[in-house]
Length: 445
Image: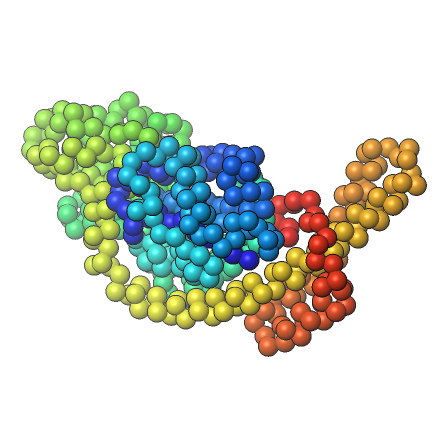
């Protein structure tokens, strides 16, 4: 089998490019559904894909089912098709995406996703938010049918490795999310938070992390503003802070010391013209703006305004090096875990074809027996026929679940080869390599 990945991230391109290709989860879901419905335009029905889209990376993961897929071994063609797909779904029309991306193949893909899930490739090493994002990418791919057993196995292995990293090392202790790093920068610029008024624009996950980070640093005068006031109120209640309607934003800006903005808006929330008017009312009182949104919430031209200091995602990245020494030490231990899990997954990759043959042979037998039975029952009610289908599928799935799981769990021991040979011998797997694949089912081989 082959794995392939196209990665566009904070390591390969600027914030200006990243904010043009970021996709929300509904957009990712729509893109995957489009791929499934029109896979003949891309890499064919035997291909599986998943999309990981965050504020710092946009990645497409790919694998093929079967050993004779026409694209296997055609790296350049695969890359061109995937880049065209990215350009299509993001409507990106800027510089050539090829120069902004990195392509990974086979075990390099496995290692890359393991590193991403564990937070080793994040702007803040060891941050835990990416773990949930990788899990969400898998779930979305399974729900849309764009990924099945093989790609799901890769993502689940990455999640397992990442959970080991956070359980067995201190890389995720005292979490340093973008929000907490932004709070640290604010404290360095304006002083202790207990004397400052803080405005949080947005009420999503990043905003919640921001409220928590500033609250942890002593801020008690925190105001949450969001386009949907009920969402602002819900977040504010968690930390006993204030919620105000978006219509009062100008008035609040005149009184606040620190602003952190993390909305999902596709346009600027704070423009240079708007903030110029705000600063005129502040009488030379400085204003610190922290923009952790993608696309950016704060218009870049605002940097030119007197008394205004702005930090965006790229600026925050430059400050991270001051806080990473401890996490770098922990990352060395994570690398050890990563190597162990890579070896285990490489062995599991050897197992997958055999497990696939086992499931395909069982499905062939199931289908033959169901068809033979239905021939003797020509007047059987269609609903009963459907129940027979469901029952026999369920029986086959449950019968094969335990041996499949045991083979996977024993991928680390030296007896794997013997187990594989036994399966081939007992079930005659080499005698019928051409049995048709079973009907696609989410998460099944």
